[in-house]
Length: 341
Image 1: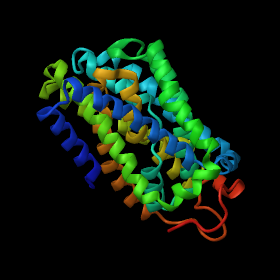
Image 2: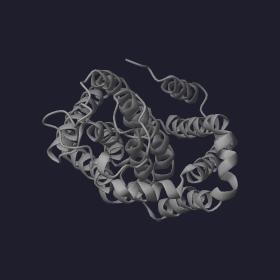
Image 3: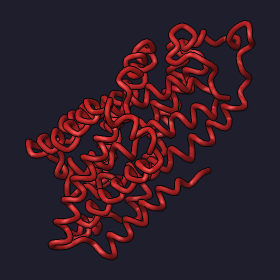
């Protein structure tokens, strides 16, 4: 049951914002730095994503379509169904954050790690996570506009301009300049990873500072937080069940089902936090709280599931395990070569 060290850093950043929130000129500087950090973050996303690999991944279109449907269709529908819990269990602000969580793209790194641990289709998990992140840059703000609207500072013309300037333009620039900066990004992947995480911490500090100054945290009680955790546990359980048995009903093989389950049931903290900062402004602190909690929950639960899947019997050399459909990876491999065990 792992505790993500980055979650501890995020919680420490929230504590710093609670004790020493940025005010006045400091708040203006932090806001400007946060804007630059978000732009840099999405520029690096664009520089890392190989266009050729993304196009090659289209061969596995049925698997990727299933993951995208889970991420941007099934999740939001469950979020809308949770509206009936307001105000009995969830406050309006927490529900807005929960609804935003359901439109965030899937993860990349943790989906790959758990798929590999469970001996699933790792290349498919890589492409599925990358596609979800790419699609989410456009789809997440549009879904937020439709489902959330102006609630909690949500979507507006000003937010649309910010999305284009802070997310789409830097990402497109990263793609266009990838030929020149791609080797540098690859060589310094570890160092730039700290830049990514540092940028997100800055976004969180700015958002929670604004929330503290405006006093919005007084609207959250321990009982509401407990109810939120219960609802998120139910949401995660439903998605893990739907992705596993739904993929079986669609006649995916074991390796593909593992990739679908881990990529289709998870939400990206790295993508969601900067987007929330752009969309919600001063209300971002409450908007990202459900996402931060869900992120840690999904890591803990999926780690247990991955270890259990690793003990499953493997298909025999002559064919798949009885009752399993042939893996789609055998018909349309994303990447050739043996998969890691």
